[in-house]
Image 1 (cartoon, rainbow, N blue to C red):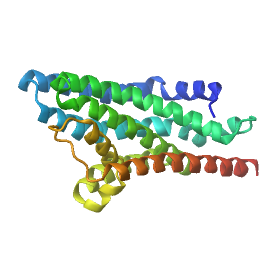
Image 2: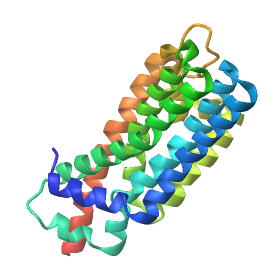
Image 3: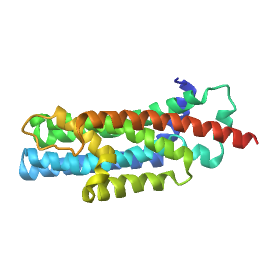
Image 4: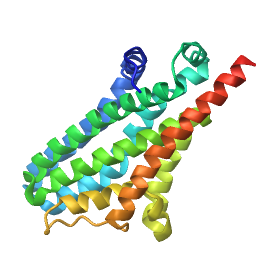
Length: 240
């Protein structure tokens, strides 16, 4: 279910100069904010929760997921080069799972490490806040990568749809419409973070942990499966 050649090509596409600069920009902003807040107000659990939850988990993680998830496959579909990959004797599930693993790896690298470092800067991991948001970001990275990778196989506007989900649905509707929070990867990951954090940490989710875990697994598995099905249709269409 993993092909080294496909992985190498995908890493090369994802970590090109332009995309790498964008991927580095968001973590850099987080770290700058963390240093500034610590310098101005000292160690503060509340500030750490607001920054790691309000910016890192709510904005940075989904944006990095969109960049990595779409970059793993959408450009190849757009320029038609995916046909050459599909013409090789490779199972489509292997192609999709390899690209998903690469997208997850890139998303994890550019989210969990900066979040952990920022959390340590902000409050030294008091109440396990840094650890909690790092774990939450990790599970969110997996789900976002799978969902956005799927978007890359079904639409040429995957980046737009990914941004709409991340910024409009998650950030806007998720904060204003109670029912929308149930279908929010951010809320699912917050449920995990809430469980990891200390009792005094002000981390809450509108979704119960068992429900969150089920939905995280379902989004990842179903997104990956359907992306593989889309590749099968794409191959047939190009062969015709």
